[in-house]
Length: 395
Image (cartoon, rainbow, N blue to C red):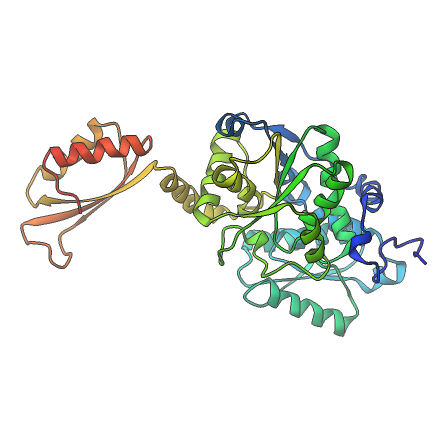
């Protein structure tokens, strides 16, 4: 018989999670979790030739969707369980969601984070009142430690994705999307452990059985998309994904970097790697998707120390950062002549390295390594052509 306080008993089969449970979760969390904007992207719509909308979970409190599932799960704890406290494993977003939900309910929390978790996410988690334990190289190692803490301390484990109440909480995103835009025909959702995609797919398919739900993965590890850098879905989420997802699309590192840059430049949106993964999938593999399309921008907790490198990689990917190596006579005025040609073509020199010591370089020659900011591939071609015609040999 279903427990009146906890509508998600542990022996509940995952396939019985349905729209009723997700609607109940929405009522549970609505006083603590604000709906997020669903906005059109003019730049992506023009580029793809179909209406494209962005569900901005990066604007959530704590900066990601994870707060939804965490609040729903913790709200269902019994009084005895609350006194025992909670423990979770996370690279950052679930950590912050659990920490804030626990603080709101006056429950002690311990969060195990892998060694690679960003300092910003560690500090944000501590700021919500959690005790942070750093352990292991990845999420799976952190999870093993969290289970050990659960076993030895009696704390309640709040799993990041493999939990019925967490899945139902994440599914509330689909309720908001389809209430605002019932005409949406395709949802692109990042997939790591599968809690987000499971909840969204269950709700979306219940509301509109003809809607297509497409998962996006980041196969590379380590990856910019650390939020979905989980080795595999969980025991509960795996069969849900198999049943409800229409297809899976990979997003490569350079594609994700390009997507982060595009969101910043053209949409004024800051997204972390996992949050930008649906944009990467749309740009590189989305030509046959049925529109209107909604991309779930799952989070915005990007490590600021990575932004410069991400922007640089995105500029390389789009052809707006060109690297060249030129051999010059080692005499006064040679370098000035080279830079004058480049400047005359409208390129901006970002970095320049003057090297006289490379092996095999004649003593009368210098190697010049340049990083140029350009307008794109056509501009790059004109620069290279002009340099060659002007007598500057490229390496």
